[in-house]
Length: 363
Length: 259
Image 1 (cartoon, chains in turn yellow, red):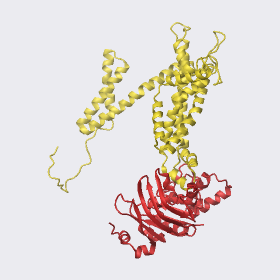
Image 2: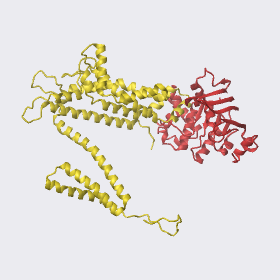
Image 3: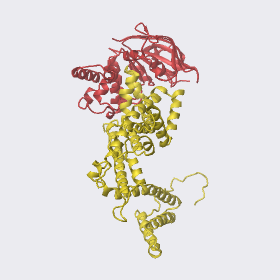
Image 4: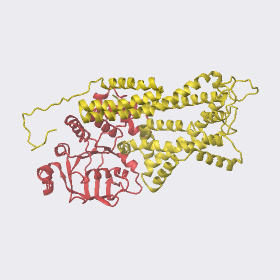
C-alpha cells in the first residue's frame, strides 16, 4: 500500500474503477470441486451422505474465500466468506423443515383415503375401518369457536390500546399483561379452562367449548399484538383527514383505520389460528377424548387432531404383519399430514386475504 | 354560506407548554387570510385551533375565545365534530384514503357520516367538487381507480375536492403547496382564487410570494426567542403588509433581513 502524504491531489492522476475479480462461475466451480473432494472419504472411509454434505460445505466455505483473497484482496474474501455463512445458515434453517415435511408426507400419504377422512374411530366390530373424521370435525369446531371468542376481544383490545389508551397507565398495564400472556405455557391455559368449567359445571366436565376457551387464552395475546402493530402503521394523517371532514372518532376507526389495516389484521388472526390449531395439552385436559364424531361443542367430549395423534402414538396397537407399521402410528402420521395441510391452507388463505385487502396504489 | 371568525386573546397550550400566546384577529368572510412566519412560531397550531383539530394531540388545550358566527367554538356545549363539519381542513401532505377510489374519496365526508343519498346526487357532488378543485378533466375517466394512484399535486387537489364536498363554511389550509411542484402550486392558487367567492379561506404558507399572490389579509407570527411562545406580530391587509408594514420585524422578515 502506498504511504499517504499531504492531501494534495494531482489532477492528472487517473482513477481506476476496475479491479481483479473472480470469474462469475467461481462459486459453482468451487462447489463442484468441494463436493468431489469430499466424495473421497465417502468412498474410502464409508462415510454417509450427511457427512459428505457437511464436509463439502465446509470445504466450500474455506476454499472460496481463500481463492478470493488471492485474486480480489481481503474485502472480496470477507464478502465471499460472509455470503457463504449466510447461505449456510439459511440451509441449516430449511433442512429440518424440509426433512420433517418429507417424513410426514412419506409416512402419512399412504394412509390418506376417503375412508380415512370420512370415518370416525368408533367401531362396533374389530374389523371395521377407522378414520379421523371425528378429530377433523373436533379440530375445526374447537378452533372456530376459539376464533369466535378471541378475534373480537383481541381486535377491540388493540383498538383500545392504540386509539383510546395512547400510553396511559391502564393501557401500559394491559400491554404488559398481554406480553406476559403471550408466554404462558399452553398447559396452564388448559388448566385454567379445566378449573373454570369444573367450578361451574361440576367435576369431570369435558366439553369442546372448554377447549375453545383454553385456545382463546393463547390466541388473544397474538391477535392483540398483531392488530396493535397494524393499527400503529396507519398514518395519523388519515385519522386527521377523517376528523377534519367532521367524522366522529368511532366512525373514523371503523371506516378508515380498520379498513386500511384490514389486510394485516386478517393475516395476524389467521396466523394466530394456525398457531393454536396444533395445541395438544390443554385439549387433552378439557376437551377429553372420544372415538365418536361430536358436532356439539357445548356438550360431551371432543377429540382434536393433535390429541388423536398423541393418543394413537401412545397406544399404537399391534401390526397386522410382523415388522409392518403399527395401525396407531399409521393413523398418527396420516393425522399429522392432515393437520399440516390445514395449517398450510390457513397460511395461504391469510396471504391471499392480505393481498386482496392491502391498500391499492393504482399502479 | 361563508362565515367570519373572530379570535380574542387566544392562548394555546400543549400540556404545560404555552405554544401560542395572546392572538386576536378577525378573519373576514369570503376572503383569503394568510399566515406567514418562521417555522415553529405556532401558525399551524393556531390554524388547527380554529376547527379544534389540535385537540387530537393529547394534552393540547386553549384559553381565550374563538367566535364563528356569534358562537364560541370552545363553549362546553359545542361538539368538536360539528365544528369540523363546518370548518374543513386541507393538510400539508396530501392524504387521500388509501382504501378508497377517487370517487369514494370525494364522497368520504358524506359517506363516512353515513348520509343517505341517491346515486345521481352522489354523482353530482363528485362532479361539482372535482370541478371545483380543477381536477375533473384529469380524472373523469378513472373515478373508480384508487386515489393513491394520482400524482402528488392531483392528490392534493383531490383532498381539496374532498374538503369542499361537505360544503363547509370555512376552509383551513396548512401549507397546502409545500409538497408540490410550481405547476401544481399554480393550479391550487388559481383554485383558491375561485373558492374565495364561496368560502372563507385561511392558509398557512412559508412562501411569501404565495401569501402576496393569493391573500387579502396577512398575519405575521413570530417567536420572541427560542422556547418562548409564538405570537401574532402584525395583522394587516396583504397590500399594506408587503408595501409598508407597521412593524419593523415584519418588514425584516418579508424583505429577507430576518433575525
